[in-house]
Length: 126
Image 1 (cartoon, rainbow, N blue to C red):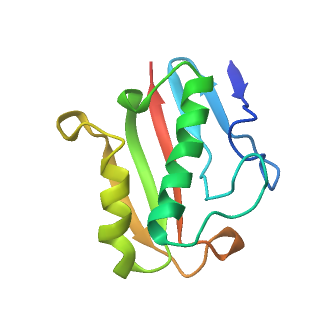
Image 2: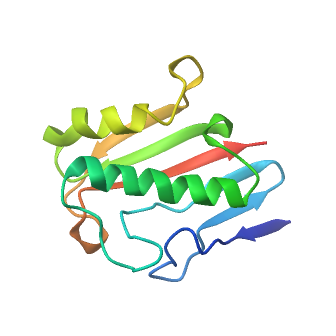
Image 3: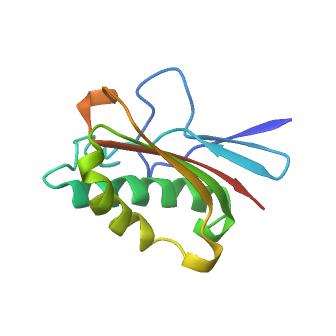
C-alpha cells in the first residue's frame, strides 16, 4: 500500500507525479528544483540560493511525511555543470550530519526541467 505525500510548503508538481510516495517505512521523493512554493518562481540568482531552495523544498516534503534529513538514506543529485559541484556540495552539507549522511550520487546531465542547474531526489526510511 502506498500513501501520497503532498504539502503546500513545497512546489506543486509540474507533471503527472506526486511530491513523494510513502510505502511501508520507505519514502521516495520526486526530484525537487528551486521553485518557490508560494510564488512558483525559480529561486536561482546564485547556485547557492538555488541549492538552498531545493533543500528547503525537500525538507518540507520530509516534514509532511513525519521525517527529517536524519531519515534520508540515499540522495540523487543531478547538475547541469560539474563546475558547480563544490558550491552545491557546500550548501547540501549544511543539511546533514557528516557522520550519518546518506549514500549519494552526483551526475552531470545535459538539461533539467526549466533549465535549472540542480535537481535532487531522496529516499528516506522511518
